[in-house]
Length: 99
Image 1 (cartoon, rainbow, N blue to C red):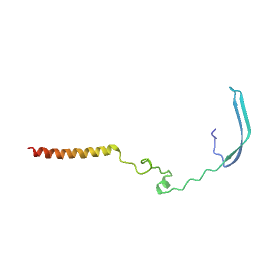
Image 2: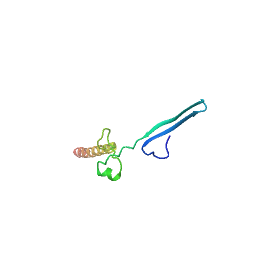
Image 3: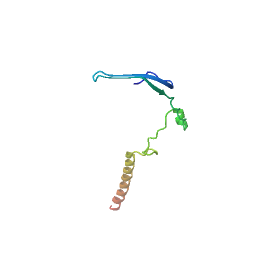
Image 4: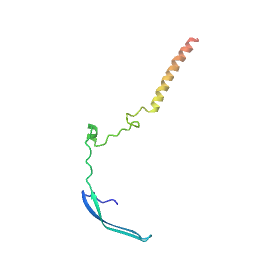
């Protein structure tokens, strides 16, 4: 059950009553200790980027880390361009030889 506010660290006592009218079950626990601890302090930023933005650095590269790769369509376009130039140059030379 969410609380309306964050509890100050310390030891609290809660009472718990559970009712299930359909099953005819009622359970009561009048005194349950609840220990609230302080959250761990945030780690210090490791570089200027995270210190300025307040955001955690996240690597969206390849699995296992590293820098993101070149998109496949860029590689495909580069290969296509090289092949088109090569066929154009060799085609002209071939046609020039047969004249």
